[in-house]
Length: 258
Image 1: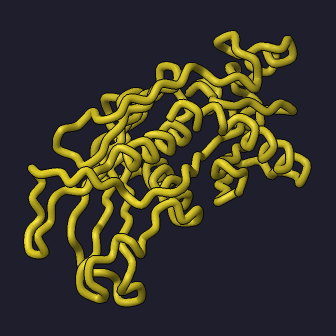
Image 2: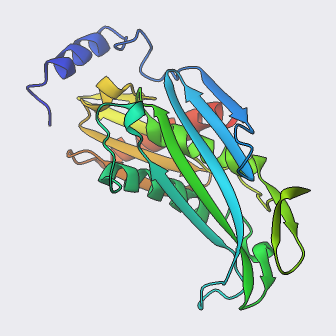
């Protein structure tokens, strides 16, 4: 725990008074903005701003050979890059643990929710399927990249249109108008515990004060698809119940921005 962190001490004093570092309440989310179709070269793309945090996501489609154990299912791949331009904390080079975690949270939410009907991505069993490759890049890190990335991923998938395919080659210059078989909107939502308080949509300064965090990915009907724990402190059953409840309640605000 960051018991000697002066920022954490200041944050706790402000939370005692009912406000946070930027004046929000503990359960208050910053303004959310989603912009679709930001890339002409991707089959689908979107930009998400949550406050000053900005993340972009792009989707490329390609015809691939299916995995041997799933010969009639399309392939989903999620990659995340924490660009140095978005924060002095990030450096060029191999993916950091933070980048790997971000990609895994988004990937797990998509897979476990079965948001994409991967069987409808099969072109010829055992031979050809559509591969859905997603790249997530950070533009500005002002905190809460996990939730921004998850929202950008769903928005980019919603924006995706199949290119023309004649059975031999993909013509990326010709769009078919056909959308991906996307039936659900899994949204990750992160709750931080700092001292005895729970806060949502954390600033970067608040994330540096965290005792524990829990990212809960849910679909619109309230189904929990995945959980991701972070931070050094343990969570009690009561903590988890409270954090899941906050996630279920507040994730709708992010989903409504789509």
